[in-house]
Image (cartoon, rainbow, N blue to C red):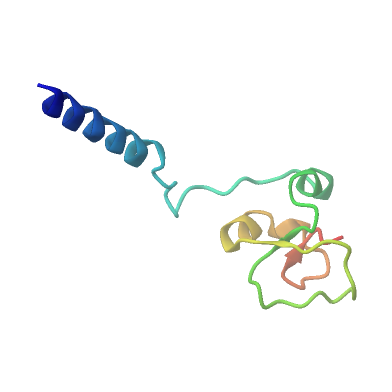
Length: 88
């Protein structure tokens, strides 16, 4: 009886980890921010399209967050068109 209850408890525990840690779908809609102030509250260094882009403005204080989907949703905030939106 103890072996069966232990097996059931182990199965339920393993099942809870797999259900609770399911990754979000890759094609989920990226959040669109109103302006750079809102973006910089969440992402201090702004949002870069790829990790290989270089900032046209020179040195920045913070490293940008890299996300193609998030950058594409907030492309309007990239004034200098260097593929980094709202860099600081």
